[in-house]
Amino acid sequence: MIRDLYNVRVHPEEGGPTPLTEEEEQRARTVLFSDLGNIIAERGWVRFPAYSPEERRRLVDVAHRLSAHWGQQVFIEAEDQCAMKLYLSGHGPQLLP
Image (cartoon, rainbow, N blue to C red):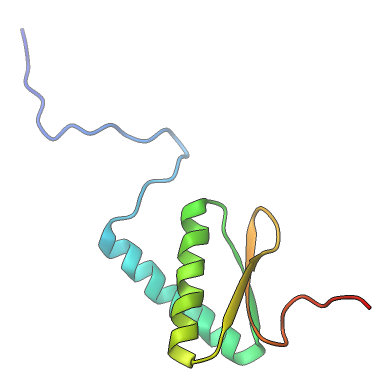
């Protein structure tokens, strides 16, 4: 007997990330813009985890949006494979003499 299957989707592997919908992506960026922006405004920098290329792209977009909103450059750099740092001028990497 043959059965027709409707609305069947392949599930991602166990423990793997699932892509966000466009609406979820917008909400995530809005929350990051607000929360990270408040921390940067308070202390001048913030460190935030970014384990995947999508998370890193999201943080880069947030840094650009904050720069446009404040009219002041918000810098972003990878600290290691798992974290990004967003900061204002004067709060970035300290170079040793």
